[in-house]
Structures are given as structure tokens and as C-alpha cells.
Image 1 (cartoon, rainbow, N blue to C red):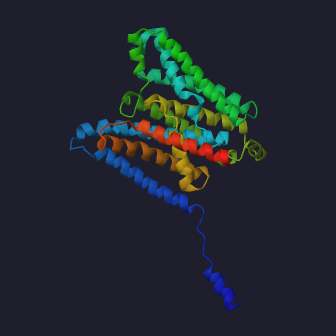
Image 2 (image 1 turned 90 degrees about the vertical axis):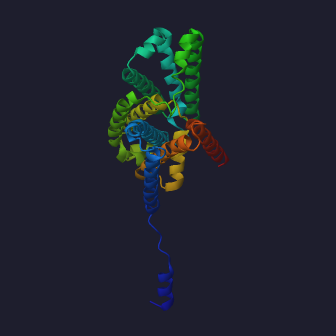
Image 3 (image 1 turned 45 degrees about the vertical axis):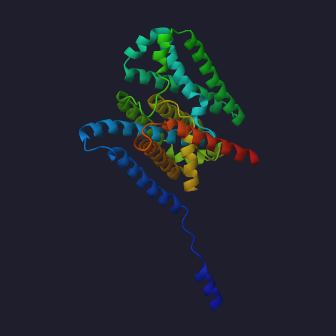
Length: 334
């Protein structure tokens, strides 16, 4: 070996492993998530821990559950649809939630809505949304190859139909009945029902256990249906399980804080930009950590810095909507 060859070999830079960037991102985001949680629980406490810990702890648990549910459901939904623009909320889940509330008041009065046990009502809502989504997703994805345009169109049509039907029923209600019903439409991060936390945690845990069964197939499903089938993936069974998990997670997040259309898109898009690695073992935890940071950190800033002068959901929807428009325009220019 000549001196030139040896000098060439020693001067060649060693490329870092592809997984180094996602691992560093996980460490940094884990630290930021922990800092956000500590700040949320301690800033402005004034040593009144007997009141602060239960009050903020319940809200913190709800924020973490919502961040986890939205992030995981969006990643799984984009994997099934093989498209990074779509989110489960586009399919009209928020409009269906409002329709369920309206139907209860329309047929059974507002007294029945307020007297109904919140945990039982929550389970009923999740079950109805899961059944609807299962039927819809099966028709869209399992009964044949559907185009992206048809998917978006069906989601928009379902949302418009649910909102129109809800609006018709609301106009026929007594004004006092409508006032009671209207309070259920504007759930926010500041008015989280604590009685639903246990039920929500149980449903999220069950959905996560079910989702673990299909984890080995997610990276293959991302390659498309023909490739997945050729590689031996039980496509119909796997996609059915994923869609049930997505429906359960979206139902939980919607029932706890109300509809958040673009939050999942925002979190997952940031996760892809940070990781630059499409493997689910990296995208899923990064998306979850980003969801927790955005919700817990954002709620801390709004409560302690802005003193509830604005709503976190409004900011999230605005930023997420901008990200959605940018992604659509980038796809159209390619």
C-alpha cells in the first residue's frame, strides 16, 4: 500500500450511523418533556401542595393522554393510508362527537344528558365512534383500492353531513336545552372532566396493547398493500386492527378535550423532520414526546405567562393548519 493510499483512507470521514440522529432526538425530547412536566407542576405552586398536586396532576394526566393518543393515532393512520397529509380527524370524528351529544339532548332532553353518568356516556360515545369508523374504514381500505381524492371527499362529506344533521336538530331545540348542549361542544384543556381520566387511561392502555400486536408489520405496511401482501403480511387483519386502535384513541382525545383537527399532523410532521428516519420505532416515540411537550409546555406558558388570555387549542389549530397548507402546496409542486 502506498503512502497516498494510506493517507486517503485515513482522511476519509466516518459517517455516523443512521440511528444516531433519532437516538439523540429521543434523549433531548425526553429531557424537554420532563422539564415541561416539572414546570407545569411547580411554577406558581406557592407551597400549597395539598391542593396543587391533585388539581394539576389530573390535568397533567389528561394532557399526556391526549398527546399520546393523538400522536399514535395519526402515525398509524398515515401508515395505513400511505400518506403523510391525512389525519383521523379529517374523517369527521369531531362532527360525529357533536352529533352524538345533539341526538341525546334532542330525543332525551338535556336533563338526561346531565343526569347520565359521565363514564357511561364516555363509553357509549367511544363505542359509537369506533363502530362507525370501523365500517367506514373497511369500505375505504379493505373493499378495494381507493384513491386519495375519494378518501378526502368521503371524510369531508361525512363531516358536512354530521354537522348539517346536528344543526337541524339544534335549531329545533328549546333555547334552554340548546344552552346546556352548547356547553359540551367547547371542551378545552382548561375544563377537563376528571371523572373520565380513569376510563380514558384504560381505553388508551387497551388500544396500546392491541396495537403492539401489529408493530412488527408497520414498516412493511408503509411500503404499500402489494408489497405487504407479497412479504406475507396478513393485510386485512392487520389493517382492521390498526383502524380499531385509531378509532379508540381518537375517540378518547375528542371526548376529553374536544376536536383537535391539525394537532396530530403538526406533531408527526415535526417528528419526521427531526428524525429523518421513517421507521416506526423512532417516529412513534418522537411523536409522543413532541405531543407531550406541545400540550404540557404550551399549557404551562399560557397559564403562567399569558394568564389564560388565550386558548392553547386555537394556537395549535392555527400552526397545524399552516403546516397542512404548506405540505399540500409542496406536494402539488412536485
